[in-house]
Length: 186
Image (tube, rainbow, N blue to C red; front, side):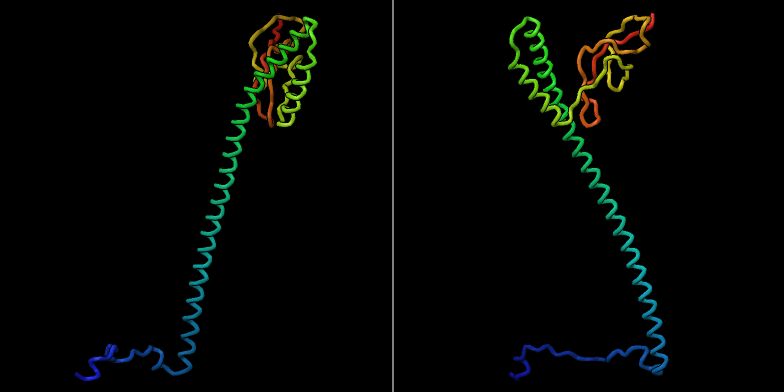
């Protein structure tokens, strides 16, 4: 066997070398065509870059909108849970107020309850939960719920004459409307 057969090289036969179309043209013409082609390619690439920039801006805007929506959804979810908790807390708070009133009416020392209520008031204030002032105001269905009507010719229609249950607002949202009695002219 010959040494050629033992080699790891693969023989390649070159049929012809392809030459560019520009080699047959004079030097001056080759330069001018190349610049034109380069200019066209550059313009095409600039168009592509502009198209990709527009797409990128659109995708970035979509991302920012989705991010804002996600943040808003999270805040709404958290606020809903806080409002639910506060509603349960307010039921207990109301019970403490009623207990204090009963003890005070029966002339029993209610200092301990008073201290607890102050702590509860501080907690409500800390979480921006404030009572809705209603007595003497004009009925507003956004803040009040009328459960009773009295006839009083001295008062304007829909004047709140009595608070039956205190309502509360948290971060400019009504978490519990005030239950009220309103007046009608006779």
